[in-house]
Image: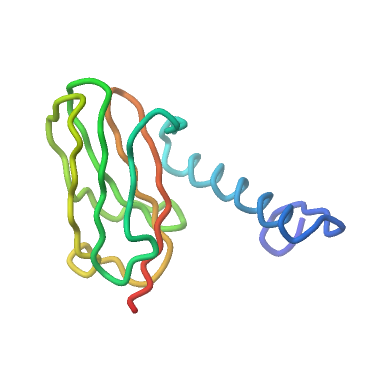
Length: 130
């Protein structure tokens, strides 16, 4: 194990190492959040622009009517805020605009989680402040 606690074989390429660290970090974040994260291949869920200077939009479409919640976590998986929580209808495209400063988000890496229908979906985003 190295200083970060990852047992990495340094004979691998930089891309392979980056993917190993990324996958291990994602697993750690999942464990810290205590949510069952789902693959969002069939779900419309985007954060843009990404990276963002300060304001950003989140667009999403849910598969069934129900309570829907957007949550923000920092790169350590620590909860930051729930900027939106409401009952929504399926099949409609929703778009929400946010200001990072108003949400208390400084420069860094964040994870936006969409929870709906008993499932959670995750998107990574970067706030640059520039």
